[in-house]
Length: 261
Image (cartoon, rainbow, N blue to C red; front, top):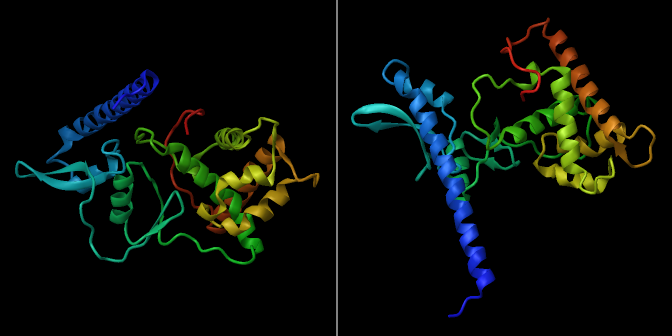
């Protein structure tokens, strides 16, 4: 069989890219595991698993395994999963019977899939009620934050959205706007927002009403200023109202740099 030179070069470059990428992930994995070695035997391995970020194999998750008679945390691809029913929702909006099944499929497809939340993914409803529309911006920004961290190295001090500053929330909103604005015209239309994949979002039945609320001049376009103001201001308004209803209780947040998400 004769292969053209361009095709051979394409195969070589593709293979080289895969090897390079795989090697980098494996090095990160070794470094992550080695950083926990001093604590093995001193800290419960289940606790160490919560700190171990899995880079390789793609889609793997941390499980406690026996190694030379010692229980250690290790990133593995599940070969089989328990039948227990403990539904979880992935960041891509798919419900799995349990977290093990999520990682089993992620490993099979060789992709990193983050856990969005425990419990089944929200089922779309016919109408977005006022209470849900008020909560939607916060949930949307929370989803953006999760997507931005998928595939990144583990950061122990990575804050939840409740700990982000106004500047950090604004930056996150701007980054997502840029990704959605494919034609770089500085505006988002409903066609652009289809890339949000409504069915994979929390409270997705509120997406269109939210977009309409951001379109302040009713021209069926949302500018960067409209998007950022609408998303960030509404997020913070809902969050502070929610916290005040809980009598001012608030989780402690780690000290972080302003530009870190």
